[in-house]
Length: 324
Ligand SMILES: [Zn+2]
Image (cartoon, rainbow, N blue to C red; front, side, top):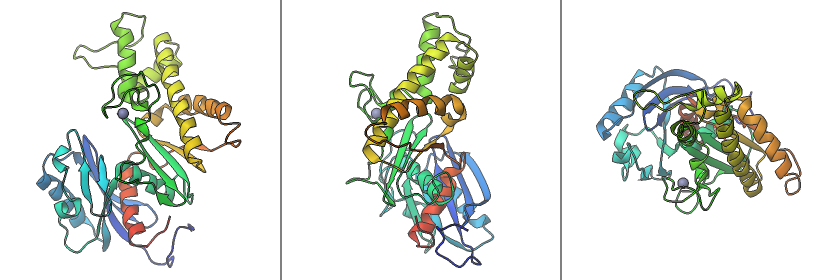
């Protein structure tokens, strides 16, 4: 049984975890071992009332007593008050709202946190970073998110914005990023960046195995990694270039945070060994003097519903039922 458990092994407790993404909302009932007992998903809500209805439908399905509701959400979240401080894009209607008030579940405790941080909490309680107290996690998806645990404490910063690792400047002369900065990691290694870089080659009529579909649909990163392995020269160039930037970024995070373990998450980890082997090689070479040790680079264990499980974990940690 886990060293994280501050409890009698015979007892078990439960919480609802909710993961609000830009296109999909996921939720489930999670027990104190990190098992997902029930889960569901729906297109992301576009109104406060539809979010409330979704959470209530999950809560009402629970056949067990709940210790609370944990919510992971994109954007900058004040974990103390559950207020959404900043949330551009499709979920902008939540900006300024207190999630605890929005879902309105009476006396049941409600916790809220940035979604990359909830994913990290899940990995530390039950996943790839179990029991660790110094962890950096990078979530590689449409964009790039990040979270940092230092000495067992989630890094939040003065205004809850700490850990936006995808917006570290990789090239000061790089392209404009969604955040207003130039040359962020997200503009080099994200599914959008890789898609657009490959598509630029297609547009220039370079010899490529993949094409832009009639509806304007771009080749996706999974296909680009696949044809790179099959010898498509353009895909190879695009993937190698993106990995070069990602490797440089990971080295900077290792030098900055000195973690015990580094976790890569998000849907881009489907690239598997094509991703991790080149990065490990770059890290080993570039950190040998300052760090002088090999930091394990691992994939997120709770892929898919890790945000849901981590959000429930947030409740257990806040209620002092489990400890990080
Ligand atoms: Zn940025």
